[in-house]
Amino acid sequence: AQSVAQPEDQVNVAEGNPLTVKCTYSVSGNPYLFWYVQYPNRGLQFLLKYITGDNLVKGSYGFEAEFNKSQTSFHLKKPSALVSDSALYFCAVRDPPPGDYKLSFGAGTTVTVRA
Amino acid sequence: GAVVSQHPSRVICKSGTSVKIECRSLDFQATTMFWYRQFPKQSLMLMATSNEGSKATYEQGVEKDKFLINHASLTLSTLTVTSAHPEDSSFYICRASARGGLEQYFGPGTRLTVT
Image 1: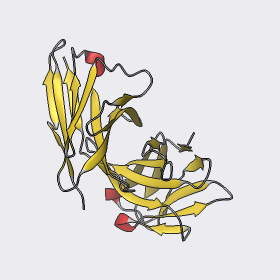
Image 2: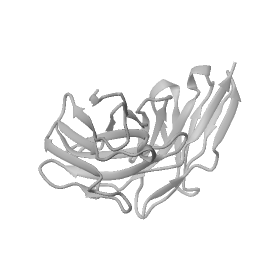
Image 3: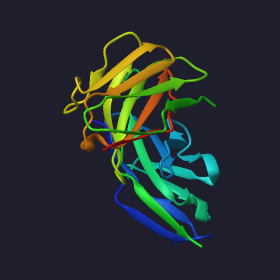
């Protein structure tokens, strides 16, 4: 079964510093990987996805993620964090077509960016 | 981008009553809709998958007679929590997927509080 793990419950950084949120995956075959962000009492917002192609994926709000097959990782990064980036971040994986569209989510990482 | 709405955004009900939550895809046809529940500071747990015109498929441990899902049209799915209890209080989020689409669109969520 497809699964992802987010090893850190919380990440704290100062504004302006680089932000990294870690995700590792376990899949059979080629993974379809996603990052989502959730603000309090809101649904999930899509940040970026990796399907195929370049290992470095650029997404919304200045975020990017690097797909590393040898390390089975898909870490989310932002070069310079903002206070407004404080939120809950989820990594997710799904089967590639024609597999079903179920998304499996990591446990989530709470990011706090201090001014 | 595609928009998925949920109604209501918040609902408070008394124990023993039933609550219906609507999930609508506003500008695309959602052949598949997924329902999740999320407890505070936890990940999303998939409850069920519904395809338009057919019965929903429930995840293990989810009571299908308690959480009634209807996907009567390509733009509307409903989740009815029957005989609600305080332990059903949670954040319910729907996700919509178009046929063959890789994009996944989440609703903004519904906060259910059962008193």
